[in-house]
Length: 133
Image (cartoon, rainbow, N blue to C red; front, side, top):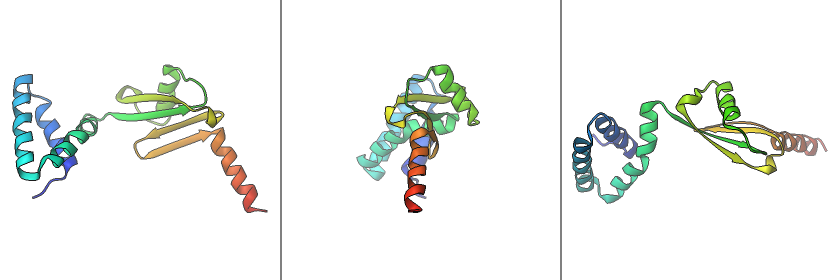
């Protein structure tokens, strides 16, 4: 049975996360050698690239990017994530200032985007007006 790079990354993380440092190092070295032997160095590179994503999935952590027109305090960022039903204590929150948003907030979670910005509302209004001309 063939495994994809993401499944291999999850397996590697699941096996090594409970080991002490020496045992983990040995397991990773064996994994790397066997992966290169069977699939080539490109597959190993892909597995290692996906390792942080696999670790986040296994540990139940999420990443959120919050975009606002002005600086947002860490407390408000946590409140915004919590308002979406996401546990802010298990979420890595990054805030980005984008003045072109004018106001409001946009939250990106994996493949979901919650956009409550003034820029979006203006764009929707502009489209509605130009379609009715």
